Image (cartoon, rainbow over the protein chains, first blue to last red):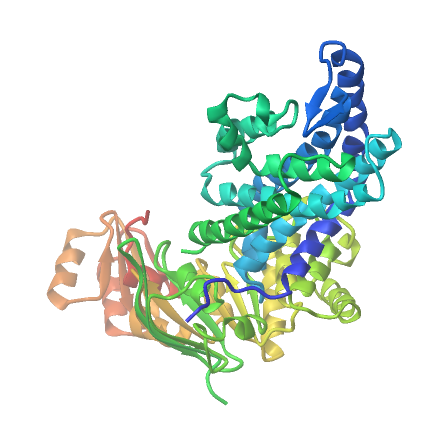
Length: 261
Length: 303
């Protein structure tokens, strides 16, 4: 009988395929993570900080820009990974039939899905690395601890990419991605301790915010940028890891159901 | 040496629908084998099971003497597949399509490069090496799909409607390439809707309908057995001819405005019809595989 998940190192070949295609467009993709943090810092630092007194976070007084700078990296990881395994993977799967072509080779479907998720994490990692340098130069990140943002971004990318891939497995048409974005990504983007601490939320809403993977990603990035966090980093790492594994398995299952009849 | 493909009592059901219903056939080494049938007959489903894309419901499928259920990866490594849809990678150039695909088979880069150059040469695509796949004409895209299917130097080539949608020039070019692969002794399994194509390329074929095999044989045998060898088409037939046919139990298809009579050359029937019933327009011609196909699968539209 076929094992439940048929996976070998061959998945790296599919990862490489995505890297080769990305090399053709990287110059354009490079600009967003480079300029986006500057825009946000400018807007919030100059425009917004007059309205906000600063944030008292985990016992430390932070300026508002200091508070949101790590969240910018975390949300960029989320967008990069989630968009890659939703819209981009859907195009490859449905419109380009790239997966069908791959399935006529020794590759298994699980390897293709794993490669897509790992690739989305790689893209998120790249964006985070650029933003880390920019925000580092602007003085928002302490080094060397800030370097730990890199593995954290990859882990966060895996979690976000895996849930994106799961949605790709169950979403009938590409327009329907609006639904998980509206119901899941947007609330997560706003209420994960990104733009204000979770403790400002009403008591009933706080546990929900803590269930968002983005919350743990923001916590970890903030921890390694500024040395403060509300949740212990080990808990956040474990949460993201388990989240990634569960949704990777669910993504493989939903894609198998979708593609192989 | 045993059979390259051995399919025994293959059954495939999805959601209560039986797409393949007790199919058995075998393909010998070096054989060019055709799987023919109308739309929805179960051809693509069968092919997808053969190259390990879909799991089977019942029966046994062996390729290269190995079981597809347990040795999927090893089998897939030795098969080349030319799918019905264009599955070329539009994000990559023509050459990269071959090189990246070679990577999926774990072919080392220098060897992949050598094979890619050879295949681009063989399929007359060298000048398009750096072109984007989107810029290729239908014929060139199909040749590239074929080239890609050969990158792993397969022992079995599976072609799902290799010339559908091509213009006559491109189709003939693809045929020529397939002929030359056949000469090299490559085993091929092909589905097609073009009887002319099947008659020209296939050593042996089966006609499938509703997931079952109707006939199995060489094109010449099948024509002789099921369409007589000679066909008379009579437009606006005389009622007297219909009476004659009914009385003498002549093999024919009555399409209302047209009668198609299956006979043999130089037969008595042939002479009688020519002399007595050919007031209106009559066409005498050799029977073809298309006659066999239509006789066996009916003339009703599918889907």
